[in-house]
Length: 314
Ligand SMILES: NC(=O)c1ccc[n+]([C@@H]2O[C@H](COP(=O)([O-])OP(=O)(O)OC[C@H]3O[C@@H](n4cnc5c(N)ncnc54)[C@H](OP(=O)(O)O)[C@@H]3O)[C@@H](O)[C@H]2O)c1
Image (cartoon, rainbow, N blue to C red; front, top):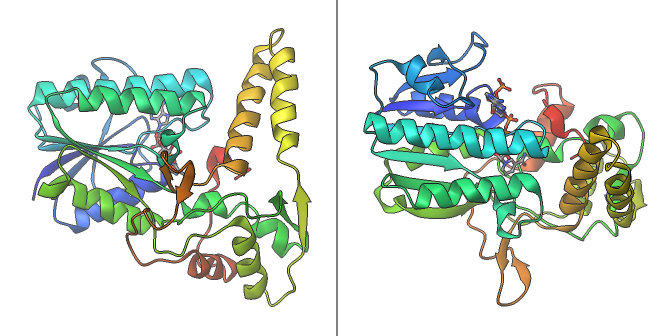
């Protein structure tokens, strides 16, 4: 049992991590900007984006480990640097000053091929953590279930599933919130994971968007009905918005959102084999047991609601 400071516990994975850490018998304290009132852990209100914000909230209390599931809610440049980098770096500073033994940082598998601002912010955090004195574990998960659930409502309403290209441009091994929460809890104490950067997939096989569409339609007992969308639409929109964005910060932000959309339409969330120049499903480690099919079935039965957050388009 350890005393664990958890950041980002109001988020999708942070919430699952709080449950897994408490379930593993750890003494969990969450630093948050708002208390949702239903977390299985102690809550301290803190502005984690400000240097010293955590120190004020924690006072003289220390922790054996810090787990960060903090992430920018929008992915937009200013927010990404403020949250994905600054807030996490403040957490690292606090962990070092408080004498914590380990920091577990939830990054993302897409930083392997960084093109987006939030990916650079996450990579900078990863590098800062690796250079620190602290024992660290960096987890790079593949796609979360919520990110592959955005089309359930439209398909259920009788509309077609939208596929970029032929629906086989990308693949991923999706992981459930619960399974990733368990991996985060394991990372707090697993001796063999110290100072490692680990890609984290869910149970295989790797699924393409076409596989996701077929799964959804088979659960609805309907023939697949899809609409093909050229991914170039998003890259074209990003270029146009970049030009318009010189006049308006709002349009510049939309350009970054279009780039994010194009990235996920064309890049897989699997381990990237740089030497071979391809994604490698076999090399993407599998954790947990929850399948996307079961998740879709539970959503369709109304047993779980999907909070798409700010990434509703994915
Ligand atoms: N979606 C995917 O498929 C995927 C795949 C791989 C990796 N990831 C990464 O995994 C991480 C966790 O994702 P998630 O979906 O669980 O995130 P999420 O649901 O968006 O939650 C983000 C957490 O960070 C906190 N946060 C954001 N901005 C903040 C700010 N300015 N000040 C204080 N707290 C702030 C949020 O607090 P509030 O509730 O107060 O806003 C929340 O607790 C992210 O870094 C994400 O990029 C996502």
